[in-house]
Length: 421
Ligand code: NAD
Image 1 (cartoon, protein in one colour):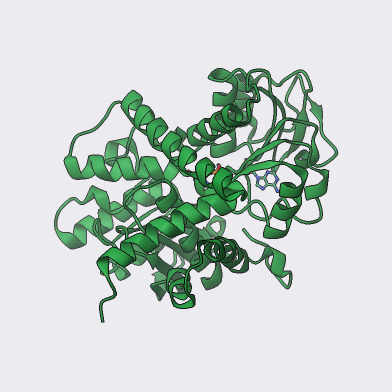
Image 2: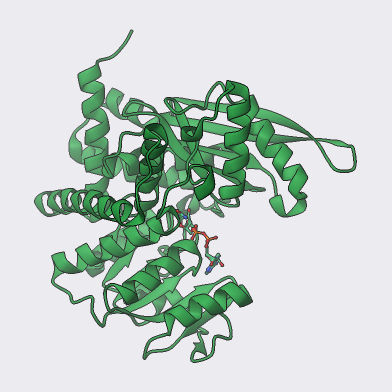
């Protein structure tokens, strides 16, 4: 969750706008076009009354932002967190527009959230809240209009409740209304690993481009959850890299000779954290500044800032998390010759397989995991090549290049469709 506060460097909406503005300026877009591309199409505020277990009524606030639907249905997760704000939801929705465009999947961008600390609710209360949100906003959601997915503190369980509620209202089973569902409820093979797999593919492509061997490269991973854990596992298993440091909320550990990642994954599943892993030493300094070749921030926003960017040693940063680097930090990293694979490209494997899930739901025909993985690789290699080409041609960072590719794709559709008045 972004700790925006008074510090504009950490405000997600400000950061999203700054990233957009830099790329849009390079493209020479007119003011009106920029305004149109930047502004969310629609943000809905929905108050959600829920009967709590003790019989009292509590009213929660929910949001759904459709930033863009010009390339296809709005796509983006639903976040349950006590700090959710309308600005954060709108910033995250705009990132989804650019992410779907850079990955070249036929979706727009959306995001939703409910202001709630889910740890304070029982399972029954959470189910009633999720169903109320799905039902109250069912005129907005739909396979052809707006397709949510999990985000912070929501997962397969909430998506199954969502599908059920939406299906009850539409009087037929409608799996394609959300993605990130359990396999038995219309989920896709390979979805759980998709984001980490995409991070691995992007890092592999970056190394190829820079002519840096990935075999034996030293990697530090901040956030050893779904994205960080899978990225680490695949970087070791498929690419021969070495994970030398890892962290999560329990602490940070390191081993300059390489951590035993399969054993660490097992350990984390049992002990709920990396701290105390046998064969490692505790890391007392920041993992972001660890002496390594590749850094994978896979935890939260705003981790690499103007305060620590100069101390980063990695040559490549693969952004598994959304928004882990502030625009000020970007400038420092660029000047140091550090290559940042931007979030909208690097973690787009998740939404790409979400798209495959939606396609499979609509076909009623499900692909084996190897087919999902092959198609993901094909999509990401193409997206990566498009971004590198622009970065080299325009002499800009990978982030600016990714935004340029994305903005151009969205704007082109506007130009072709024309302005309805
Ligand atoms: P997760 O909850 O599985 O893992 C997050 C990890 O970060 C946990 O290990 C947690 O302990 C750790 N963490 C939290 N605060 C930390 C801190 N201050 N220092 C170090 N570690 C910390 O979540 P995830 O699904 O892996 O998502 C991680 C990031 O990737 C988020 O920014 C998310 O928005 C982004 N992302 C996820 C997906 C996806 O498909 N899961 C897709 C795109 C982007």
